[in-house]
Amino acid sequence: MTRVAQTIRLRPEDRGLYPRPHSAVRPHVDAALRAANVRDCSILLREDTPSACFDHHGDDFTADMAAIHTAATTHDRWRLSDPRQEAWADTGTAGNWSDLTEIRHLHPSQGDAR
Image (tube, rainbow, N blue to C red; front, side, top):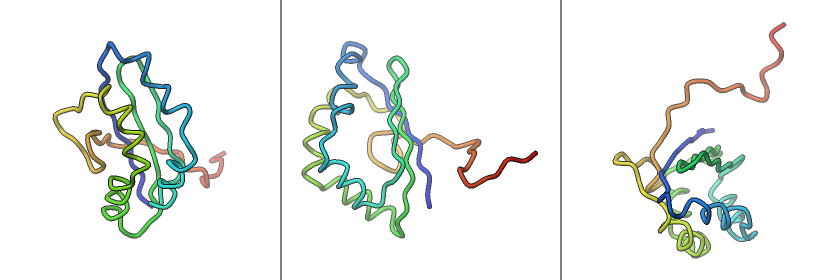
């Protein structure tokens, strides 16, 4: 499994509009993510900075991300969200979003250390 965390900036004038397409995602968008072996995916927002975190459970991350990028369902959604985003200078492994470095993760299978 590969855990991916990323961030991007929002155009300040679009901050109020950005959450709408993400809060009403159509089932075929989620199906495209699942088909690309994406699991446990979250998008979080703090002011003008969205962050995303997901787990990839496939054997070929590059091919799975390419499948997402070529799926018509994701292009429909990106048509709504991309104009509201501003990429950081260092884009990451999955398009215009920049990778974040994980410095700690409490895994669900880790037991209580008492």
